[in-house]
Length: 287
Image (cartoon, rainbow, N blue to C red):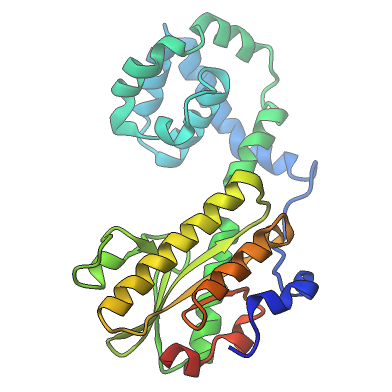
């Protein structure tokens, strides 16, 4: 690699991708149109419920997934803010969740009283729900553009993986006897049956503190694991970490990624979309 990730830091702002967002309060009319049916349904179930656990069980019986997930988010705000929404979304575990966490649910009479004091639709709650709507979209946009660029740049290579939403590639299904078979990656770059590189792609809107340490630590573990396996199998697999977004400019993120790339010089590349055409070459992938 002629230039390292570190060499771009002085002009880092010119090498990141900025995804567009929504303006407040412009989103309120759309948010209220989208989520009013959710609040109406929640109000109906709330009026019929004789307890908060009964309300949650009624929500879990909603067959339409999108509606059930939104109702779970409203339930969390009104009834159980300490319960992770991902847990509340698990339809099959509804009874277990009620058993384990139901004692801490807010009393149904208090929930009904609070709900009745809010307008319909509740602009504040609709705005909160709107924030969930495009969660993950920036990451999906990033990987989609990545696949387009790679296929244009390397028409003879095979680029595989979930281009937007979808299941990650598990390295245990790609490599025999891989030490951590459930290790997920976002994409593979192959030449015929030969894997040239495995990669992860992340968009960082805003990161810092413990989150920052978690991300770089996860990357370090992944790189060490893949390269150790490759060395043991006499393979020259590369690891590509595609990171983008303004979060790269915060804290020590840029320096941490540069150190990671330097730790495995010639085997690991950290790059943004804008750097990709200059940095990721066929010679490097094959070396």
